[in-house]
Length: 499
Image (cartoon, rainbow, N blue to C red; front, side):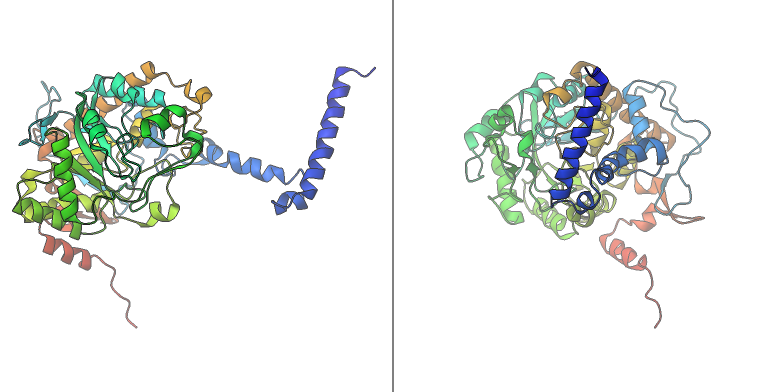
């Protein structure tokens, strides 16, 4: 009688023979057909490539979209650990594009600093204005794209830190409400949670959602940074019974969003829709989320604000570097302009038309540290939103598996087994710690510039490295006049080589 290990060897041999036969007869993979069994190693190594590079071979500054240094800072602040660095910066101080703050010779004394900012009031003239007292808030990440445990942790963290969170376009779930934090309800083109079958707004359902006390304002989503002009997709693997019920979608199908709202196709129609939504929300502030491709759209908004007494109460400007769970590479890489330039265009255009004080500008797009948030404020934003930074606070390891339902940390998956590893109570504390650290960081930068409040940060407090050894004031690169701004952009283009 064979010992147990003999049967194991026989079983292993049978498996090898069976696998070789399958490899030789299949027609899908040429490498496996030509090199049976051995060819499978190629796909194994490919699967381990990203994590191996991330942990063993990649430098601290070599990863994208977020470097190891950025992620480590978030992890440490989220855990309440020491967030300082030693032995100086690793960033190349002469790299073109690096923005530097100009420290004041006599900074604002911080002996009795309380880190309270002057509140930003959204919809000050509306029936139910919303006062924001936190510089950085949680950007839209839908339940469906994120697990229920992740959404609950974000909601609880928002309550603990005093910031607000956007629902994302996946509608309002019980987990957004359970944490007790302030909510910005995002109304996307699909109208999830309050839509008719033809994607128009179900006004009765929307009024119910907007009337909830946690819902402080409404955001009409026109576009998202990573895929402007492209509707969202939630793979059917992520569509659970609960998600289908909340969104009002069928089971067993990929969930597609239209690439724009069916109610309007121009600025006049958008303004009419904004006012209608605000009336349905009983006077709560209503804004728009958009990605810019130039100046024309903002110009029309500014002209409308100047000539009328209504319109959006805020604009969330999403940079083309913004993230998403799933986007076509062509869209993520090549459509839209960066947050940096978009904020300047928006701020300049609103000032040119004399309506800057009528609307709040919110910036979002690859902001993860306090310095990046402060730069956005200096370029024209009043507030900032962060998404992927808060995912890191939840435990995200940048595995780049958001679109597969196999997120190993339980953040971006609907797998019950995977999401069980994310404890909402523990992670909510980390979310709050990270939010507070961002706020504290921006306040400290403000004082280092000799200012009292982050709202005072301007382009005059920053400069940019344009080539090694040459630094140019941001007021020169991004002048306040739109005409001067356009001329400067032309002057900064490389000269055409002589024939």
